[in-house]
Length: 212
Image 1 (cartoon, helix red, strand yellow):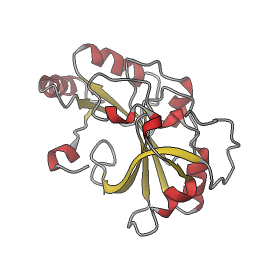
Image 2 (cartoon, rainbow, N blue to C red):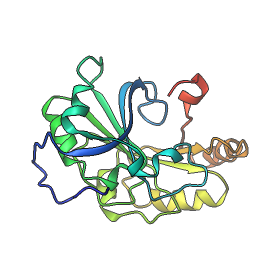
Image 3 (cartoon, rainbow, N blue to C red):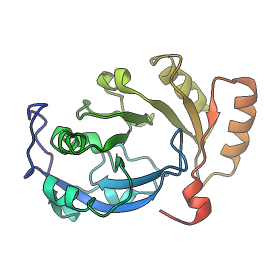
Image 4 (cartoon, one colour):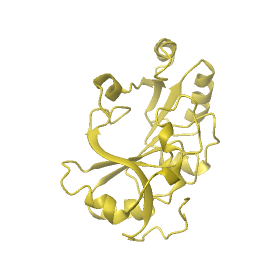
């Protein structure tokens, strides 16, 4: 079910519900925070439908149980990190204010991973913006971007990456990440970054390590 996005931004609603695919403690494998100890909350639901998506099982929300904000926060009690990453799926299908308001009140660092394809909600310390050419970006995302990360599968993706980069501040870190199933994408990115030094390389290091 799609959750109501009209909740007030300052609400502390412990009974608000989200469809949760999984929650787990690991190390961030990508982008600016690569190597950081973090707790991941993966929400269900996505309407971007990337053909190479490695989380296709998250696309359908009704497959997954609903957790209240209280349920979710209780899973953090014995976890030795304050860095909480909300990912998906596409988390912005949901109103994220109820969850992030409680997390912030309890002193957690909130981090969102999103394609930016839906209106922005939530109180976040960091936003990983990973737009996709398959779904129009919602304009509300651009003022919240902490880092830009674009998946590269072929040369046309560089055109899309530059277009999205032109819409955010110059000092925002900008990453190009290979499409995991396409070995040629690594070569394309390597050569592109040598010619365009404003870009950085992001690798899915957790896959190399064999962890989530």
